[in-house]
Image (cartoon, rainbow, N blue to C red):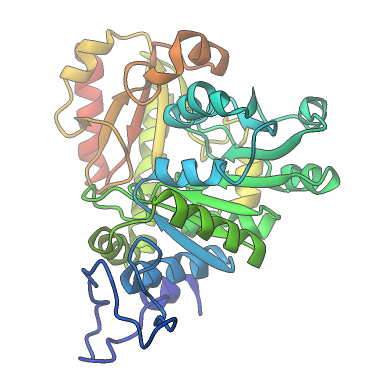
Length: 377
């Protein structure tokens, strides 16, 4: 099946009891056993649930993995993934990762004996130099949050296989519609399904897709042991969102390139970050490994930030991204506040950086909204 067909049909079977097309919400905590020591396919919803399983199978199919797992949030997925390691292990992480990821790694997991090196993953020699005897994982985001840096996944996979290191890519910004990291040799793919996979700003969720039976067993063991799995109703909402993923991503991307081109020519904008622009330093790599460039645009402005943000009408000042509504955020005080000033400085996330989540509105209206706000600032 082609991707658009998979997004509608993967993971879903008509209800055997009623014939319902929509996957039922199996809102139950437990399932009866056939007999002593003989559970059915599902026995307890923390461990597995039919609604969640439908979503997990769909995500695995869309990413090209062997198994999928759905979590209560993107951070629950990230927390579960990092628990695949043990005390004494070392991780190389992209330096401009999501602020919540940075906080978890630098302030929480270090207390349990994990080591982290935050590094711009744009140079093969630099990455190899960062590898230690105890390096067990390379963690990437592409495009990254919020600077939209592009990582060459084939390069990462090549290095990792040479040194017997696990690889993980946070694919939240691209969704499997625009990028499938497994096709480039990545071992684990992670999502905050809160964003584009769900696409409606009405649920929190996360996902991991694996590539081997051993990884699938390990991820499920952690999901069950940590209790990080997604609730049935939340899983159903994400599953519903998948049906329109291709249509939404095309509109997000077409709107985003128009906004990026507008901002690129604005006198109050000093730099635009969007991999669809030929001027973006990762543009050629993005063209090679992505079908489209996504719906997030970041930019630097010398305008008064507060005046600009208060002057917007269609762009709502809010955390998160990937929904139908366009959103704006100030990364330094919102999504990446938890990195701290030094972490943001090292990553290149300044106080002049604005991140836009381009929604599904008419693009001329979005540009007019930005233009009015910039003119007042």
